[in-house]
Length: 117
Image 1 (spheres, rainbow, N blue to C red):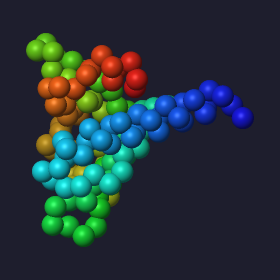
Image 2 (image 1 turned 90 degrees about the vertical axis):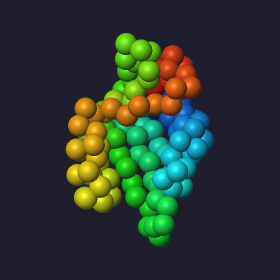
Image 3 (image 1 turned 135 degrees about the horizontal axis):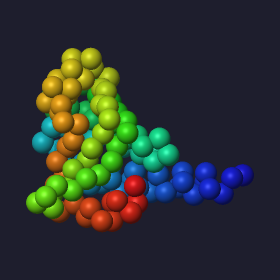
């Protein structure tokens, strides 16, 4: 048993649960967040969402994530690529998020997140 791998896995699971509880109200206007998984060694995030009015969930995967703060102090989730389980949605996301970043809620504890991620 490799203690480093076990600790990293436990950290990822704990952080995934914490961010799942934060993501639920943030994404509630669009649907129900069913699952959120962080793999910090891979710098990836996977979110499963059941959009309002839909019967099948959509999977969103961010690869190469990071955190950034702009000149106003606003926090952003940055990423290298975003894919979804729906090709049409991935294409929309490519256009809508061309700068490869997502604005985080103003109350996001950036220092804590940066230390954890």
